[in-house]
Image (cartoon, rainbow, N blue to C red; front, side):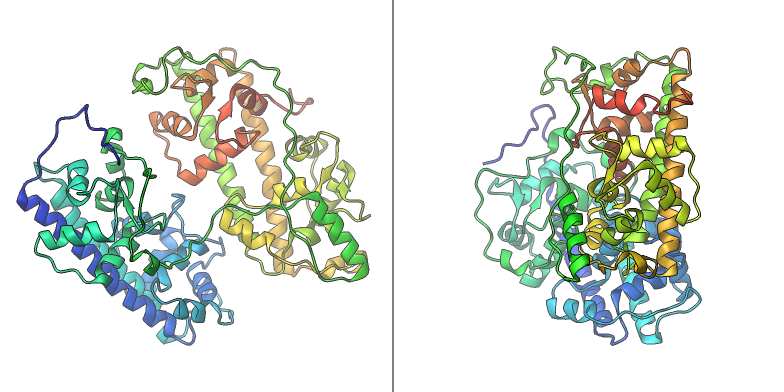
Length: 567
């Protein structure tokens, strides 16, 4: 059984009228989802609807994702007029990583049918076709796609009003509302508990209604609505609303025992994304062997894990106050940095977020090029087929794309991506440099089969557009490393700036590590907004052993200037 952690707060008894409004809201969410599903199915039935072509139709500028302005332009082209608030609400539902853009997988989740695998397969199995940035899709397809967005926006407008009306009531409490539905105290809402709650409030719900509600609210696809998912689906889409939910109300999402609902099998929607598959150096040697023999098969594996260097910096000691009882570290935490130095640190983090975001967007766009693959790209640099790239070969490779890095820039790239510090870039290092961090794009790229072209035909492997996209990525890598080094140098040249004090300023709960939430808190305190994806990229940069948290050793490694000639 689950226990609700509400001892700190007095219980709020929800009245009958508020309970009935909650039941009506859940029913409205289900009915709206069913209506949108009908429109999705109409779109999938259009013979000219091919998802990737439709995705590129909205992505006029070829960024590899949809910004809110791109979606707004598409709607205006089809005489659908939406406000910024409407787009914010729409993106909150489908922008899973919180980067303010819709990736291809997120777009698929928004427009493809959820209840008809046959129609999903039919739509995704069609041949893509070219639509220029000045053209629209065929009339019926364009209209059907716009209709999906229009229906979704109108639905969200209605639901937002109902959510605001409910949550502003004097007797409203998320926790008590959840307990009203979860009568059996399972810690999650399943098919049966929702059905009983609606029936108790004289609302007749069909099986399709409850499944529609689960589709809308059940983010992790386990056939149940956890407390966190319940709060998320009922909270009005105010950008600061989520911060008002009491942390003490959160319930663990894994109860000790749970008997799956008999209707769980009806939820058959597949999950897009997941963990990115990686490749190892062995794959490149297989590639070279297969290229020589013209054998078209390729084996797949994972990136090798680099051996972490032993730390020479002592991690700051953990506070004697245990984390479990240290309820509000940010309130009692006193930053050792002077205010002006902390402002400089926050500004530096913001600049790092911006340059990393630019690079990741270009990597995503390159990954969507159907003729691009990592093995052929590495072979382009490894002209001799030895399985590694020297500094000279790296520079020559950049030269082939019209880029002329300085010795310092080549040194910075080698310092960052040469995981075993032997002065050579191997295939796993190169793959780490080019592969997007986002799992959906990384998996698309890693699944590509190379051409196994010989040295003389490497120039013919990639199209002109793909070479241009690769050039943009390489150029952005140079800019990124230059900007990162300039940030390090600027901070370290400040007389009052201290790397140790900077770490302590970020480590608000004083446990010897900096987490994603602590990076976010530092930025928010200085009026800087960063999406979850931005923060994830920031953690990836600092977290050298990829364990999800930044130690003092990791922090020093990243903050110390790398280029000897500049330092």
